[in-house]
Length: 280
Ligand code: HEC
Image (cartoon, protein in one colour):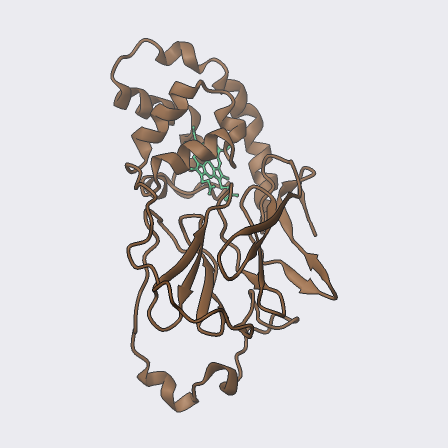
């Protein structure tokens, strides 16, 4: 999917970037910034972001649910950089504020876990995207702690909202009583399995939306961000152990969970790497 998307994307980009170069003159004359935003959207974005577009770009209604900073970030350092490069900073900000929701300030979570919580267990119960090496996505009864007969009687115990996000990220990884999950707001969260309280959050440079892979000893969590960087963080407190930029292509992104095998970390990179292919 990534492959065809990137191809479609690149083939659409050429002519539109050229149009963008002449745009500042057109819009410098109007003073109303909402009008500017509307006109800028029509000139620079609509061709791709219209409903049923062939590039599979999010529709305008979806962009309207995003935070302004998310849109600006996409235009200045993210997936839309090639489009944003043809605009001035003021124009990028204007279209972002025309489209997006006011930013929700990132603040410390209101439901932090008590400071004297039990230390991390080192027993992953659901690890990464598919849990096992063949990505079977199957959880045996013993590991789940559930029987088939109990399934229809399950009720919601708690729910957790990612501030300002329009979608969720990856599925949670479960280690003992803790979950580690990439939220729809781009941060990585460690939550308590029983109550949903927050142990820590980690803010990567680009948005993280992969499933999180944890080392066998439960101490290190691995994931990628939507700008092609891989990260290793300490599962007990969210401290960064290392990060590495795997591909500098402007559309490089990591949306698949890394896999750990034989002491090596395998990280899938997609989104236009080297022009039109994906790599590991
Ligand atoms: C050449 C086509 C094209 C143009 C022009 C274009 N976009 Fe996009 N845009 C896309 C595609 C395709 C995606 C989805 C990329 C993906 O998910 O890999 C996208 C994704 C986005 C996203 C989501 C980014 C993310 O990280 O998920 C935002 C925000 C966005 N575009 C804003 C804009 C704005 C604002 C403009 C105009 C200033 C614009 N785009 C112009 C094709 C385009």
